[in-house]
Image (tube, rainbow, N blue to C red; front, side, top):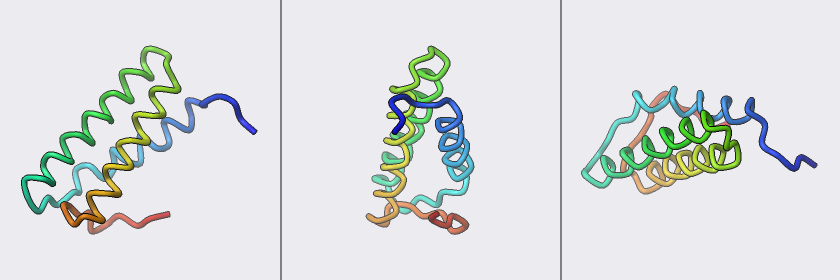
Length: 85
């Protein structure tokens, strides 16, 4: 069991979410708000990573993914080319 966050894990999930941001189709103003929040967490992830705070960095990227998943389920935005893995 790991007891710390590895930078490679952060980079993996950060790169994946950055790859879908520009492909998002927004359906309404709530979708715009959710996308703005998702982007803020992506920015936070980078900030904490650059400060060496890998736990907060990983938490931020997890929140970005959570918003992404929930927004799709709520049908507030969609990424046509995204496939869940």
